[in-house]
Image (cartoon, rainbow, N blue to C red):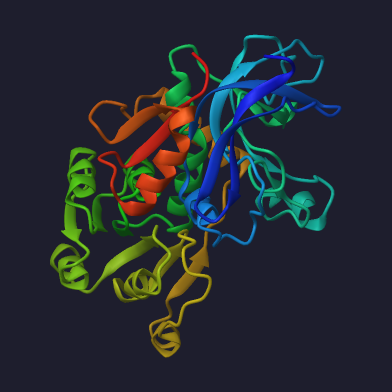
Amino acid sequence: MHDNTMEALVWLGPRKMEVRREPVPQPRPGEVLVEVAAVGICGSELSGYLGENSLRKPPLIMGHEAAGRIAFDSDALLSDGSPARAGTRVTFNPLVTCGACDLCRAGKNNLCRNRQLISAHRPGAFAGYVAVPAHLCVPLPDHVSLTLGSLTEPLACSVRAVAHAGAPQSLVILGAGPIGLLCLIAARAAGVDQILISDVSERRLAVARAWGATATVNARDDVLAAVQALAPGGADAAIDAVGLTITREQAVRAIAPGGRAVYIGLHEEQSMFAANYVVRQEITVVGSFTYSDADFRRALDLLAAGWVSLDGDWLEERPLAAGPAAFAELIAGATRATKIVLRVAA
């Protein structure tokens, strides 16, 4: 900490982002200060960077896929019931819920009527420090690196999407970005036999094959024909991890009558789709938003069990100061890596 200020990556408006010195956040009662070590760039933050995400208003410190260390001792209790101690390595669930509304009381805390997201409604982790409710901080096993720990949040999103798909024998994943690839991991861990994944990037498709996809198809080719080759009559389920009208339509068309289409991608605010086809084929269309506490724990368990490897060039680490360039390159599709994680502290 330098004069009670910290380095922070601040989003100032569409395509405008700067590294500045900002005040270190002051934790509220029940919160802890986390010294950030690693923080991933999420697709929702890319749309935020462009000014296309309704949740995010400048100026804002984004960043919610993070891991680091508790900065100061506190009597506040972490997610496992242990007191917060300085130096404890944690990741955190960035979804702050009220615990009191009807949906929270019904166990649907991800749909909390008063939910707030660290990095949208509250300052996020593209900074030296972030204030987090202590009970949302999850201690990391000793063998899980801080970079790997920062993947807990996106993997938890994917765990939930795969759960929404039911228990399919065959699954189509549209998009091999970070969420699509992590859906592949979650599906394999759940025992899904046949998984086809599509993307416009051959580099990403190569990662998908290395991670155990049964089949891949370039999205510029005939995706639905590739689905039929793998699963004649249609797959049991599809996950759209892109969020464009074309991929939402493909998800519905790729599945057999009675199948499930899961929408997790958030690109286009509105989409037209074949409503009569959905009716006549009894297609279930379900949205998947964030995760439950159980999904978050499951994601960390999968990371601890070695399901995700940092080997290969699918993930790239850069210093926080390189954040503005990283955002610009990701928007331009100019990065070799599928995922970029910014390193803040050692």
